Image 1 (cartoon, rainbow, N blue to C red):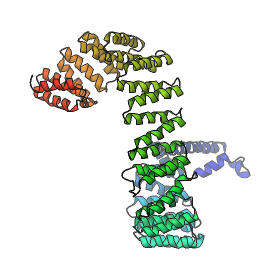
Image 2: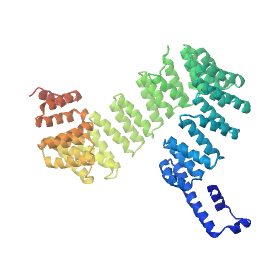
Image 3: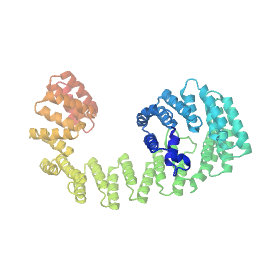
Image 4: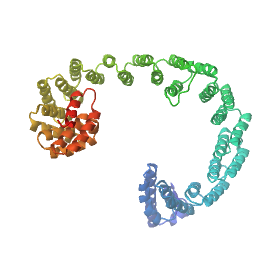
Amino acid sequence: MKLSEILRRRFLPVLTGLAALFLSVSEAAAQYAEADVLNDALLKASQSYADGDYNAVISQLDPLCEQYPGEGALWYYLGMSRLYRRDYEAGTRDLGKAVECDPRNYWYRYYYNLARVYYREDPAEGIAGYEELLRDYPARADLNYQLADIYMRSGRTDEGLALLDKIEELQGRDEVMTMYRYEILSSAGRDEEAVAALISFNEEYPSPRILNEIGTFYQAHDRDTLARDAFSAARALDPTDLTATLGLSETLVSLGEEDQWYELMRGVMADRATPASFSASYLQNQSNPYSRRVFKHPERIDTLADLALAAHPADTSLIRPAGLYFNSTGNTAKAREIFLEGVQAYPHDWDQQLFYIQYLVFLEDLQAASDAADAGFAENPGDVRYLELKNYLDYQRKDYESLLRTSEKIMDLSAKGSDSYISAYANMGDIYHEMGNDKEAFKIYKKVLKLKPDHAPTLNNYAYYLSIQGKQLKKAYQMSKKSVEVDPDNGTYLDTFGWILHLMGKDIEAKPIFKQALLYGGSDSAVILDHYARVLEALKENELAKVYWRQALTKAGDDDAALKDSIREKLAGK
């Protein structure tokens, strides 16, 4: 029994006529049970299909298709799912069985023929099937377009164009059809016919969209005078058309008509009706050395940027592109001023504040960056992100007193035991170590670990500083081991653990730890490379040790004078 008939019977409100009298109870129960199985299966399969779980559809329907081979819907979902799984041969076959079950079903035929066109080496049968479908459904405009596309993909361009002619006869000319004809001809390499189709349509139905396409065509073929005329005509029809504006702007620059370009863009950028996103994109292109155009008067771009900012004061989508444009010209003072104006316009916008501070760091003005973080906190009291950012900046400046004050402030604002509280408290321990007060540092580390025993940064730092003193190596070993267990892919923690093993005389155990540290960023650290070389030296692998000492020497920075001297002595055999 067909599924459609079962469902019709199941959901018919009242069975009328004498036919109902002849339907036995047992027969009805069997039919209802059968309908339940198929209906439930289809519901599940259609949901899996909608979710994109094609494997589930296949596993659900494959056995049912064998049990109910006459149900087209089952074959349809099975075939479509197999196509999506790129099993094109089986998918096309299953769609063909759906068509056999219901030859009049439009969608079964549509996708079956589509599959035969695109997934068979010989698409002729699929094309014939599509042509037959079009004859049966002549009012379906989408079929005409689809068949035209099929003709084009099959290299039958003239047949595709003839079909477009037929559609135009029935429906008249429009932009969509004209653009489609243009694409077909362009794809076939018939460029002059393609642009002629656009020109012909525009003569009858003037259109900014078509004129822009004509202008773009001429631009691509280095026929800038004709491109300028097309874009100008588009703007005459619609002065707000930004595609035409941009096309005309680029063409005027190519023609060397810089004064005309400037007059055009000055009016556009100063117009408040021009979207800020357009101005931002234009300035972004001027910031990019690969897309930047060269002008006799480059300062005119500065004026355009000022006009855009005046038209959209403090617009967030324009602030950064404008500032970055001025930065790209070397005018960092102007860029800084623009970013500051953005901060002042949006004092509660973390992203604006952070970007400005990052720019100050880029300019290496760490004091100003720290002050900006202070100002941000003043505008957003209670937001410890500003204080944490200030701590980072003050650490770069080695302003330890400020670091201590800020860390205490973070702790006052944070719940005891919270991540912010723990990080700030641990940070104070690190600061005291930097100040040479290990006694106070270790006292803080102990308190931090009571609050959070598995705080890996504290475990690592406490262990490393103990190892530097050469004291309590067993305690240092236990803490370092725990930090590695918490974060096994941290090269710094691995270095500490390996170094403590070395100090304990366990160089054989230390060697694989250092190898792992090198895999997780250690190869860029002069200290870690030096530590590993010392382990290799202890293992009598002297030549390999020298290899890593040489690498360490190249990685050491200007502040690593003592380390450099030590490495040079090792390489000299002292």
